[in-house]
Image 1 (tube, rainbow, N blue to C red):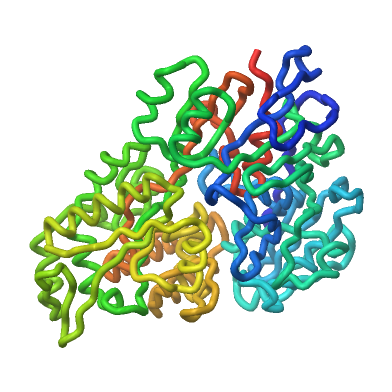
Image 2: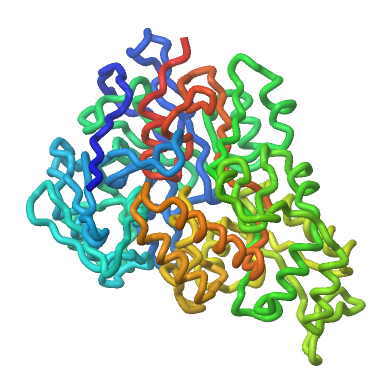
Length: 553
């Protein structure tokens, strides 16, 4: 059996928390951590548009988006080690072990964790949370069959088949308090005053600013510097200007030509870094909807574009991933052959002809008397996705004569359309996770939901029986065992994805860090080898980032 032990936060000062700043103010106030002029709060660029609803329900009631900041409130049992591909570290659980068959996973919880209202965190909270999902009360789905809590510090998860590779999934399965949530209808409740094990406690809320106090009794220890976290609903040029000025400290947006427009203005304090995660962002086809249910159309649209041009125009640090959506550097030792993407216009035209398709004078696709106008739905808050969409549309027009409308969508309608499959082509990330099984499972039958029902992954409703069988077998191999067979499975999976083209992997996926270090230093750095990343939407990573910051001297 394999056991893992707990790693805690990096050591930090035990500065106590003091009175909260008024929520709508950018006045940083005086602090006591490093002198009277030290900053007391960190200002973080939020996401999801310019206004927010007060909804901290992790399971997102229908029609209401989850408010930014839930990852600072609710935590998982384990977290991903960002410095070592595929490695996991303890968080709310201090250790874990699988049985020899891979059908039973036992977690031993940390004994010193409390909820922000002072109640003890126990195994009953974990069981309650996961039972909500298993009972179908939420839009999420888990691959295990049952969960038990034999005592306050022990959680036992059982599977119907060997599932060693599912361990990574627990890095995103946040836990909620039974004593609060048991009284609510999870399908409709918006959880306006969240109680979590994380360090952040809601101090105030407005549609454009959220203020959190940082707990002095947090189980991971007192923060090294900030006493308050404020999240701001700002987008576009306004966000860039506020980061340049230092009224915003940090954000995660892509910034075209950031080296010239931001870093060069103040090289001592201004930081822009791209953290590759090994997978891809891209265009997802709805494989249930014509004309995208025809593989010839999908292959043609993929072959007709030059993605290197798109990456160069976006200029936010991206590279071009493989056909199967992998970062060729991160996964260099397990790539299938002929994975380098390249433009081939003649092949694209041949695919359309083989499928019986023609292009009308108006730029639509036509077959058997049916005409289809093409539209690409892109997530408007991500400027680089919009830019890439426009580049692809221009290339489809030039190479195939197709007219593709680039439809920019705000957060709420985009989230709804993607989850229920109300689209033809959609900008998104094909995979989740950072390990091969974890990634590929998000496109398998393990994450498949019928069209019209809410999906967490596999928005394009991709289905392939051989692909599913290979993913299941890959998940049955214990970590570190039978590397040869694992590699065979991973290569064949890539071949299927390349042939079926359920997506176009347009850019290597990664996290962007835009930081003005006039007030705070100690942000994660690729060069420094941090085991967490600067992503405020990912459980544990955002928390570790904030808790380990220090005032700039």
